[in-house]
Length: 116
Image 1 (cartoon, rainbow, N blue to C red):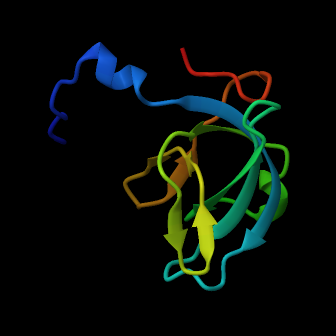
Image 2 (image 1 turned 90 degrees about the horizontal axis):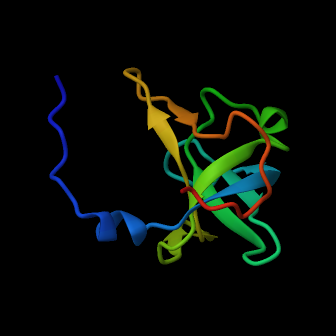
């Protein structure tokens, strides 16, 4: 059984800016140490298009990702991964096999919508 995380305060959770965006472009990230894609995610008019690196190649093909809405952390500092600057974190759940299943809404919502 997995150990639970330490308790946090509501104010801690409010610091995380989680928003919906639509994947509009996908490229194989050949320079990454582990198999990954480069993603371009449209987060709406206020935030624009942001880039992310995602190790999701085992469960997703590029064509399957285009148009998919995903939940993203948009207020982490940018992170250099090989020759690519990742600006957001696309969220997912890790299976017992180590694969990542992307988090996305059950119905379409406007890009940039914040998790409540």
